[in-house]
Image (cartoon, rainbow over all chains, first blue to last red; front, side, top):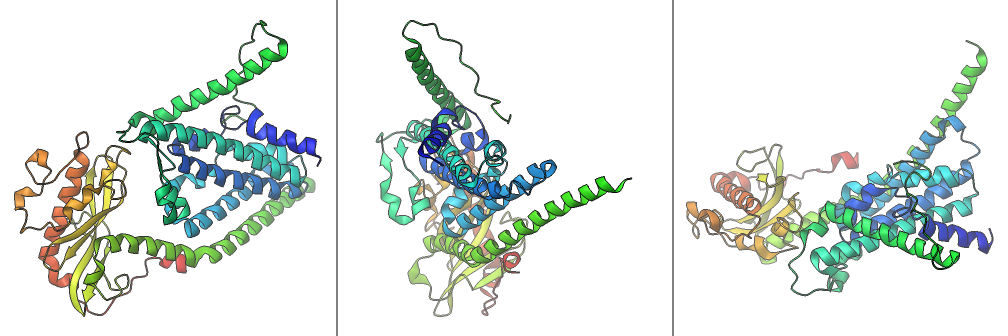
Length: 236
Length: 221
């Protein structure tokens, strides 16, 4: 694996093919958990870990898995990894486990995990596969973090609330009250806030992309309509 | 049927089986590795809540082990046997912690623990689990709002029978505009729990021998 390849995989995962705002895969946890930075980033990191590990686990065995049963085997491996993460969180981060609760097992059904395994890890060596899973997962984490931050500031006027659940009581004083004496804006915390926030992020990403293309073509060129981000490899 | 497809199928099935067995082995290993730790965190979490409602000066026994299984009760709102934790000071009953459920929250059941002193005064109430609207009805959580602490020290001596309502309904308890159903359910459930205690006081402290409950039996086996 040379530097060029590493760069490309990272760029693809974190930015160009971002799971959250370009591929639009794995929206279920994205919308449900992104009501604060801590929740969003925690689930994002758990997903990134599972994706990296599943890339690492599936790539070396790809030649031993018959084509007809590859999907069941992949799902089995992903499910095992997710359950391991769940046990670990239950044991070592109980508070966070209570908050993220049902979303941890749902990582199995998050189709971005299976999509990367199918599209990348089943065709590439172990190292690039691990990196691809990690990059895609970190891309998702970034979106979850930004969306969580937006919803938390607008909804509660704070940032990093609940950090003590992840890091222990030490972090209790680390909450940033961005807007003091804020009474909250419930819409941002509830699911509609997630949809609106995600739409803004997608719009922002597309705007950047368009601007880049326009620059590349020279100013004044008319802009082609934006291609939809869905259905790149797998539908949800 | 010719032999070739059968052989191929068997081979595929065997392949899947191998992966299934490997996966199970990894899971069993992790389960064993984390089991004790998980039980410990669950107990620590429960103890943390109990410690919030039972003043340390009021007991010298091992509350977590001094338990009593009480049958499902309409008054407590429970539909299965629950555990009562007993605090004692020099062998004398001081506080009992009961699990209670308010069935009529805004979005379903509100599970809580209610600590009652031997003299039928509330020592404290904490919500353990609920599904109330975040940002609106969730002020019943102590972590979010001190609202629930107005039960501290409440008793029938302090509030008459009719006072166990939110102020909007003519009672003694505060509520927040916009979410009245939630506190109404909590107040009602706490009041019923207090009645339950008053009627069953002697049984609740009865067995002096600790009856350890293995709540995590299925995890340990």
